[in-house]
Length: 401
Image (cartoon, rainbow, N blue to C red):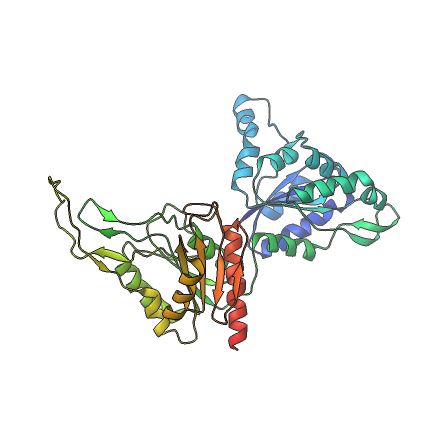
């Protein structure tokens, strides 16, 4: 994962070098962006040596046109490829600029251009920290979803004592990991996730499928990887990029998915069946294209293998999670599926709800558990939903011990 580390002009800027090393321990790729004032306290060469990457210090490059063209759009390129923007130390000046949309250098422009989560770690004189203007700016930023690592109290460089000292490297790194979903609570566990639709061929040019994009399954795969799991991703046909580190097994049909899942599930501690597996397939695949006729066409269908039920009958100590996409009777269908399939949890959603349907980046789900609990979740990004599901899996595991 790639993050941008913004370093601004305060005495605590020297601590950013130690922070780079700590972030690299989490296998994060760090791109440093320095303000002009930051260079009064520490040199770009220090960060270039630590990261092995160019340190961005100016909005525009040298006078020649080619360099200017590259630098003029560099903030957009960085904004699009980072997973998080961290500013540490964050001065009162940069907090004010962020709060009021001022974009007068690379860092402030990057803040406005990125849709990645933002973490700021303020550091300044105690009076500046307590000033109503600073607190008002922080309130604005928090209201927009910016994550703040509050400064510590102690002896400050100015000789005063109080709040304003940059938070510890560990506290900042922990906040970054939490925001990114990087944890270590699935280390040593193998998680198998199925994702995407299956395609059931009618003839060489036609097939039956569904509207699943695979986004929920891929979010689960990414979340499990970030939390330290060994990840097996059995995926139907999608255009989504495969998460780095995943053991990816592409499949096409429900039959192929069954064979791969049954083969790989024996080594899995957790199986999450997020794929939209077709319930029916053509009873016979035609070897040649069906020709159009004058009358109606009758297509004979047969049930596909019920992969979740098969796993439920042979579950053993594995945690088994199923999904249910419904249009009516959500709770009744989910409860029935939970009992019939032998699963530990069913994640159910009403696909007619706005923000919970196919190909959306958000989801609205309810977790149905074997102990009778129903846990409704609000509309959340699918990555956040994935982490909530993984959190509940850990709770199930704890209860079984």
